[in-house]
Image (tube, rainbow over all chains, first blue to last red):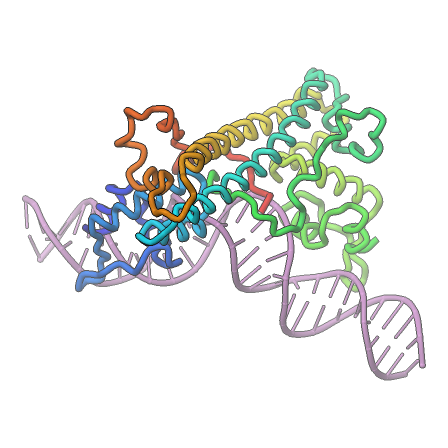
Length: 160
Length: 160
DNA sequence: GCTTGACCTTCCCACTATGGGAAGCCCCAC
DNA sequence: GTGGGGCTTCCCATAGTGGGAAGGTCAAGC
């Protein structure tokens, strides 16, 4: 099987196949004399595994761990569960963060007339917003979001 | 005010100040004879506006629009609301996507013993998972996530 | 006046995954 | 033997952000 066929069979693009090989997620594929990569049915299984894992939003790093555990017959399910749970935790954090943003923005949008007039609570909030607004409460729950400057483990962004 | 002071006063890093200028979110700052950037109080206001907007997860592109509207006294609040609403829609989509991932993964993790034994429904799902699993239902709602290959407007990832 | 240290400048690199595309070689069918 | 499609590598772009190097500047202290 060459790269195109492995790609079609696994749902992982040829481009990604090369990339995964390059970063060490996949072992270096065997080559034909002409230099073409060669894949086996086993490889395709691994690729499907990876693809499913990516669909669940797991980072490449975590997938590396999981593939390792998958191949290891001596693994303990606890290790697998730990990796999964780690990702769930990240997802929860991200969901919380996005939800806070969404709610704040929706509140502001709801308060905006949305007509031809220039007055707009959205701009008003962005302008001075948070600090000077303690009394109004309710709108002040903006959540500092984005851990600013922290290498806080965030959910990798593969949507874009 | 030089860049360090503007940064401290606005909460936007000096690095980002230069970047925003480069991409045209900010006008080119005036310079001293030595080439140092000079900022005014007005600039700091704009920077704070931008920072608040980033905190709400708005993309630079949307912020450009908002800053433009903010400066425009003839604006209609409808335009502002449209931008905000667009972002809320994206956030909702992203939240839905992440939530689907989270739920699937949590279900799998819940089904995993998490002990020393190697059997693990998480790996089992990733392995063959979805297709061959229609009868089990409930677990099959995986949501194809990530619009694969689509330029589907996703929420920008500024968390990482 | 000179040194030192903090600050500024530009420029390049890294990150996460992914796609796009160019230049060039290869393979198969006709 | 020729054409088209597939393969190779290599570079670029994405969206924001941080890190750091090499070098110029400024202000304070001696």
